[in-house]
Length: 450
Ligand code: NAD
Image 1: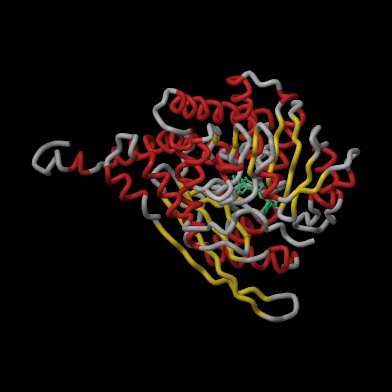
Image 2: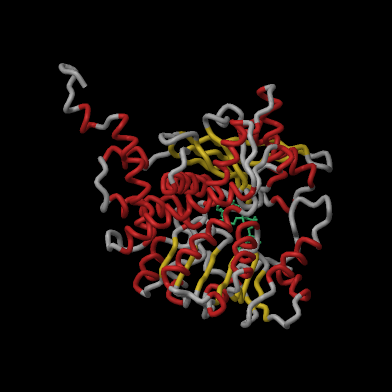
């Protein structure tokens, strides 16, 4: 089966410029010193590496990898590592900036960072993938660390990959360092609840909307684009509450059933077709459709985005809803589980059409919140129970949601995204002010006490 490339993905301007557009929109509505923006427009550091990997056939291949630390004023850099053929420096810079704003929006003590390797990991054997992951850490060892920059999983990296990376870093520094990376397997210092955290965080946002809008779950139809870690968990939780998840998709295409798909059976079928030693699940939802009791209809990713549903959850990759297809979105609510699935031009179209967008830096923050819990547990040498993790995640998400939704509802910003950026920008602005901007230094010229 070939990849479903029918989504409007040809409209790929610079993601970083797009990220800056959002920053400028929020800055116009918030009282922060211009120096705050001067600093946040440029990342703190950019590391580009080439990673030599000995392939199984004896030959050598060089892969390009990046790590960008966007800002570390609020704490060590934090952000995932992505393995994907489309990884570029521009993309990693944008993802790192979003991490700065995400951590600030939900109030956790981390800055923003991101990494990636330009590779199609599904073409590598498990041994080649392990060598690549260890090789990347060898190259990054000087710029990551528990108190400088703490990576995590992202698209096509997972707990196993994080485990290899943690082990490699520990070998380099010659002591065990579980707190250098989050999203690890439980046996290697991972946290209970980290695997489900991104989907669960988005689910908590939807539960708030359910309360605010008086939704009856069984009458709410949901479509989920991307049936990986984040997409599966949010679909599973919504299905368990009685929501009708009518469509799901992955890179090979999607399936649709108007009365609601049996999500647990679909997840079970996907996992059952994964070999014990496989790193990735290669089975598409399209191939798993035969596990359904009902006949499903195959749909493309482009069709899924335009389905007549109440809630649309893009949970795959960026730039899926652009000015080309935004007008065709018929959902009332879009919950951005993926990073950057809606372009800044599409924001305006969705706003005009009264579509409420719960922005990525809030909707998918559950992952980094529980990564913070994992890091804190590693540093304390103490394990939390699953119910402790879920409860603290719920409190963090509910509080961030209330602040951001409240700001938007009061009319202080035109959309929830700008409200989220403004909320984060105020926190960042305060930290920069506490270090001193020109406002402080020009008032204290060295002749008097400060
Ligand atoms: P994953 O690798 O587990 O799953 C990605 C899914 O997207 C897969 O089902 C894949 O087939 C699908 N996909 C890839 N390209 C696609 C395309 N062109 N069209 C449709 N589907 C496509 O990744 P994940 O961890 O679930 O991450 C998904 C998104 O959520 C990413 O944008 C990621 O940055 C974001 N996110 C993830 C986390 C996390 O903790 N996992 C945290 C925050 C944000």
